[in-house]
Amino acid sequence: MYVNPSISRRPARGRLHAAGAVSLVLALAAAAGCSSGGSGSGDDTIKVGLLASLSGTYEAVGVDQRKGFELYLDTHDGKLGGHKIDLSVGDEGDGPPTAVPAATKMIKKDRVDVLTGIVANGSYKAVLPLVEQAKIPLVSSNGRPPVKDVSNVWHTSFLSKEPGTAIAKHIEEKVDGPVYAIGPDYQGGYDQVGGFTDEFKKVGGKLANPKGKTTWTPFPKTTNFTPYLNNIAKTDAKAVYCFYAGKAALDFVKQYAQSDAADLPLYSTGFLTEGGLLAAMGPAAKDIYSVLNYAADLDNDANRKFVADWTAKHDTPPSEYAMASYDAAAVLDKAIADADKKGDVTPESINKAIDGLGQIDSPRGTWEFGAKSHSPVQKWYLRQVRRDGKQLANVMMQDLTTLGS
Image (cartoon, rainbow, N blue to C red; front, top):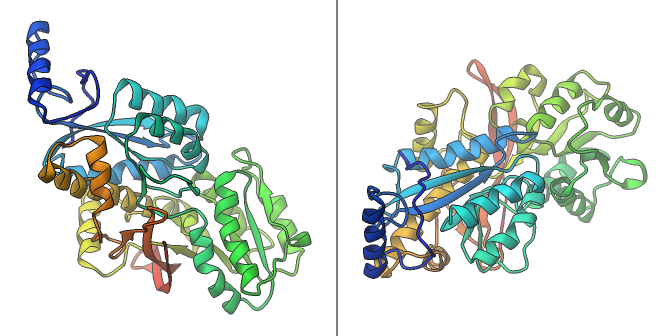
């Protein structure tokens, strides 16, 4: 198991292997009558901060992120790169007002050596300056907005515009007519839906929305989507494309199935039906199409192990959120081991080691960090909610494209 957050801290970041620092910490511990243990106590423990939405609209996303990272630790003796891990967990909540204080505590008080997680783009933008000031690596594991300086920024999931970009041409080819676009009125929604609408128009598609402009629903207060769905039914739309996640996704799908728009094929980023949400939606989710960089039924050795380890602990299939966070731990595992071989393990040496990792053997299939974006160069898959035995599942239908740079 991973090590719980300890109260002993090293006075400043630096050489985890420095003999002088070790001697000083041991002397201080002895003088205080404390036992050795925890980061800074001479046992080469590395502190990792995980920031995720453990409450609010995206609780289901954040909980899976945490479970995915913890699963990797649990199946690797609580270590990454041969070092014990002291995991600090912070609640991102619904965005910056909660995320910034949580990140500040982990970075300035807990003095983590690396930060991971983060669900929402707004949180990401608000937390990034703290990471840059502390000069620690950020290995995030959900949708990420564009970042100018990626020197210390890495990403195991996707850039937020990529899901929509990946499926736009397929929808234009399969749907005989205009498509209605709808999503939440915040940065993540703009990026996710914007990736689709920009590419859809580029390949010749037409939006059914009035004046060809996406419909935005107030976030996070919109729980009644019926008026919006009624408006969709009054247009000449032949299909609908949306982005919702967490509780908003549950509300949207259940109400969609009961609305006048229910006969229209529903396409989405995979987060609409991801994780435990699908079981909660029940038959209302049947036949929904989605695009994602992962499906639980992908046939490769890494995924078979991941799914087996996950289902041994949890009742639902693993989600993309869990997989991407699991991969963040795998990236750190390899990078810390490489840094250790070359000398001292510090935030700087971990960051340098990540840059030289090359291909990652992942449940999603092999991928690597793009040199320009530091996000994955990876395949994207078309999925559909279908019956798989007694349960509904996001069944992989076909490869769509490979994106990343």
